[in-house]
Image (cartoon, rainbow, N blue to C red; front, side):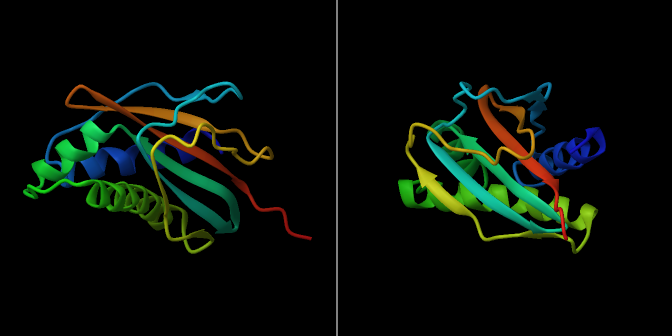
Length: 153
């Protein structure tokens, strides 16, 4: 994972908020996740990556932010089930946008959604995990990218 790859995910995130939320999100400076960094919020979705790349894309956000996004899109019943589904859609859209840029070798799974804070999530150790802070309407969420190139025999 290099700067060019990170820019692809940042562009996908910027496009998502610009198109879906119709309001730009502020993208913070990406940084390397340390083992003791806890960036797990109320709703999270993990997309597994396979093919020419290996790893995961992980999006996590506070409940208030997800509810605001849902209401902003015109839905008035932002219950827990809809919030969980919506965070999966966000992760899937961002990973799907990266797939368009990186090609067919960047294969994405369906999202695994976590509601509540599971305490910790383990990321693959064979690639660095980058954290991209995302601020929208005063709420902070995070996109975590842990993707490396696949090593084939």
